[in-house]
Image (cartoon, rainbow, N blue to C red; front, side):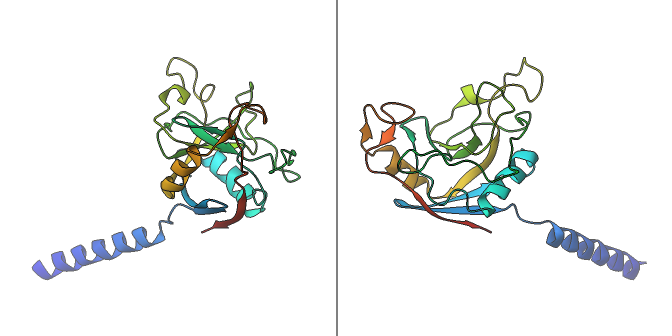
Length: 195
C-alpha cells in the first residue's frame, strides 16, 4: 500500500513538473534607445488582444526609428508614431486598431499601456511607459467593462533607471504634439528584440 502511495505521489509530481514546463513564459521585448535599453514583460493574460496586437508591431520593426515625443515627469513617456523629425510613421498595412481591454489590468509605475483617441477602441501604435501610479487611467468601475481607461499590456522589468533619466531631459517649450513635452535632443529607438 505504501509503495502504491509513493508511486501515485511520484506520478503527481512528474505531471505537475510537465505542466509547469509546458506553461510558456510571458513574452519579453527589449527596446534599445539612444539613452539605453528598456525591457518589458508583456501581459497576455490581462490584455490578450492588446498584447497580440503589440507583438505583431514589435516583430514588424515598426518601432525602429520611432522617437519619444512626450515626456511628462511624474506621469509618462510616450512614443510610437513619430520619428525624430516629427514625421508621422503609419502602422504597417493590416495592423488596424485593437478593442479596449481594461477589465483586468491596472496602471502603476513601470506599467506600459496603449494610447487611444476619443474612441476607446482606437488604440493603434502609440504607447507609453508610466512614471507613476496613474490610478486615474484605470477603467471606471461604474462603467461597462472595457469602455473606459487605457489597456495595460506590460511592465518594465529592466531599464526603469533609463526611463527616469529620460524624464529629466530638457524639453522644447513650443515644438511637438504636446508643447513643452518634446525632448530637445531626440530620443530614438534603435532596435527592438522580442524574446
